[in-house]
Image 1 (spheres, one colour):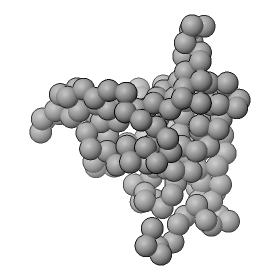
Image 2 (cartoon, helix red, strand yellow; image 1 turned 180 degrees about the vertical axis):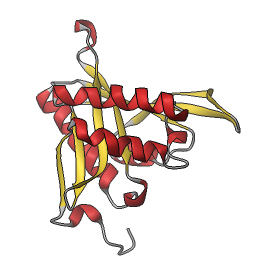
Image 3 (tube, rainbow, N blue to C red; image 1 turned 90 degrees about the vertical axis):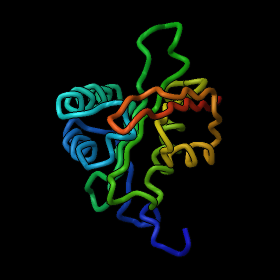
Amino acid sequence: MNGEHILTDSTDFAIRYTTEEDGAYLKRWLLTPGVSHWFSVEGDKEIDEFVKIWISFARFTCSLTATYQEEPCGIATLFLMPYVKLIHMSMGYVIVDPGKQRLGVGTALIKNLDHLGKEYFRLERMHYEVYGNNPLVNILQKEGYYEVFRQERYVKEESGYLQRIVVEKVF
């Protein structure tokens, strides 16, 4: 990263299981201008519901929170499927504090979530949905994910439509 300080190299960086209290950080990040653009939610009501659903997965120990100096700086979660025929796969979601992006947090979360999914939940494959030209696609590709399909005009915003890209990794 051109010699800049990588947050994840610090002894003050850690990854732990997500708690319900982390929902406040998730909500704050989603309310940061420009961040909800990368997700399919808009406005306070939708964000509140999204946070509630996202954080509810913490009770299954399938959500990880990255911390720096003990303060959350990112969350990655397996959105586990409740159906027997689909328990071999999961959709992943990841978000990084806008002030801590491009410092290795997203990559560390994806690597750890992959490990959790493969080793603990015995997943056979993982997926991520990415909207627009989100730089997350580049990180996922570096971690072995490949594009399964692309759908134009998927998310409708005031400024126009965003594409949806679904990427997959087979373990």
